[in-house]
Structure formats: C-alpha cells, structure tokens
Image (cartoon, rainbow, N blue to C red; front, side, top):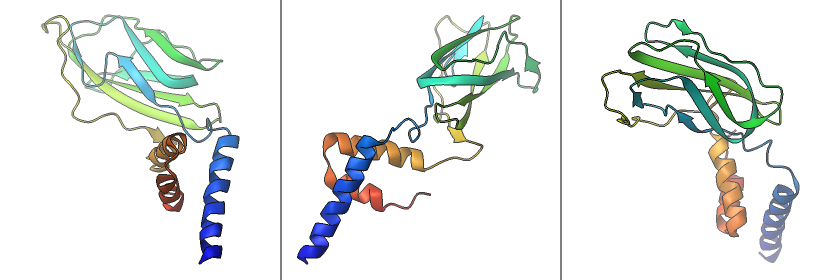
Length: 176
C-alpha cells in the first residue's frame, strides 16, 4: 500500500510541476469576453462592433449578416499582431433586423478559434433597452466544441487553490 500511495503522490506532484513549468497559453484558448452589442441585445442603432477577448489574439475574419443571410459591409482588416480588443466600424446604417456576427481568430499557439453571436436592431426600442440571451455563445475550435477547455481551466484553478483532490480527479478525467 505504501508504494501505491507514494506512486500516486509522485504522479500528482509531477503533473502539478509540469503544469506550472509548461506555458498555459497553448492549452487555455481564449474566447470572447464581451462584445458591443452583446449576444442577444436589442439596440436602437449601431455604428460599430466592439469585440474584447480574454487574451490577445489575431483576428482573422469578421462577418456580419442580416436575418436573410445578406452580408453587411464592415471596415475590417485582418490583424497582423495579437490584440485583446477590436473595434470594427460599419460602412452603412443597419436596418431593423436580427444580425449575426461570426468571427475567427488565431491564438498564440496558432489554434483557430471561431464563435458567433446575434443581436437585434430595432429603431423603436428604448435607449439602453436590452434582452438577455437564452444561452451563452459556444466557443468552437476548428469547428468542433472542445470539452477539454473547461477541464484545463478547472485544472489550473485547482492547482492555484492547492486542491490536490480536484487536480487528481481532473488528471484522471478522459475528455479527449
């Protein structure tokens, strides 16, 4: 029993040490922290989109489509350097409709990250009136939802908190 306990303790210690030594930016992919307008928000008018991310990334594409699927012109250019915040001006006034913003970015590790969100333009809405989304936007990696993202975030939180039971449980989980 003593050897098994020592082996388990050694494995947890080695995993924790490895996690502290290795860079985490390649594991914890960024996501959209906030946007203006927000997902599900109703606005009276709009002149620009604002996207703020949890970590700097290179924004590779942004598209805006109306409810009929028509592309709306944006003043967007691919970013050469990673940034945490982007402001994208609209080229025209938006008519009343539901709009979908789809963006694709590249993390520091070169991993493609895609996400979309929707909002409504209603010129008759009261200033500042918003509706909250039913569900948060889903981050997708190369077109697939990736359950390991939450596990990695929980793992790092458990390491930081010194919760060895949670670290061991998360190391044993099979999410790939």
